[in-house]
Length: 392
Image 1 (cartoon, rainbow, N blue to C red):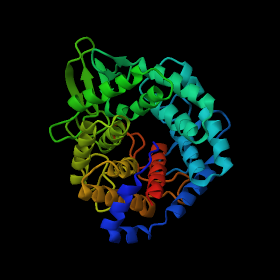
Image 2: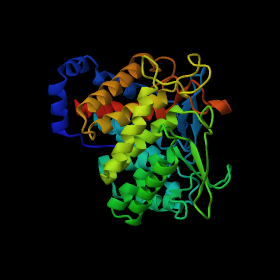
Image 3: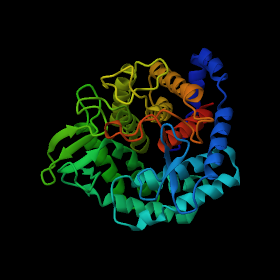
């Protein structure tokens, strides 16, 4: 989630592209962070005092849909609060972030329900520990990493994503790349060293099996439980099994960038660049906010997905600090900033509701959360703003 940018890289970039630096000054990051704080303050006023957390505001409504700690999105709201504490230093945000993070504590001592423990616990307690070094947070993170590791199938080489076995065989979804960060962190901060090996093996197996020849990602790969053989690739939340689902490709770009950060293995950096390339090359919208699926048949009359843009914008900022190619570095920075500016100028919720962003698409084929506000879009938007602020 958090990374330290290289001062040398930034200096070279600014010297090599002064026009970008001048344009950058016209975008007021502080103003956008203040907007997020204001919106979050409004949301705090309407959350019921029953242990639930805000997930989404549906299109046409002003009311949040609330979920309990078991929901896969439960970690994003406390994660936003921790980011606001990081951005402002205001103890108000630390207090609220602690409160909502603690709602998720049972996840660390329960049987693994699915792969989403990283989203849930590392975005909440992980961000909290980064800022506070609270030892109780660390205990929860380490326990949860061990819980997530119980879903690893060594015969396959990946973590089982959905134990309910809805699609047959051992299923692994591209979203799972994001949850490897929890394992990497735990392995380096007092946890079992085998957690590192599990994360690397999952990334290697995913890199081998989860992508088409053009480097676009399937949503789900089904493996044989016993032999580990890849049986088929399917796309549950995208348009079709052969389409490029925008958020799925976003998870992949972010996930493999993170894996390179944690391993420094150049094969992961090379792969992150390749999967970012297909995303950027196929992005046809002027504002760089994608349609929910790159192959959706009704384009340009298809819903956008601000959440995918938020995830990719944050990932590209980090990826820009690793790539050695100056032109690529400049492209990543320029396009990530364009995405953030577009989200800020045209996708903010403002008076519509108290979320940060409008126009995200959750699961279109199921008719769920289409063209609405969703907490993970807000989370990665805020993260991208903070990363851009650090670069500046």
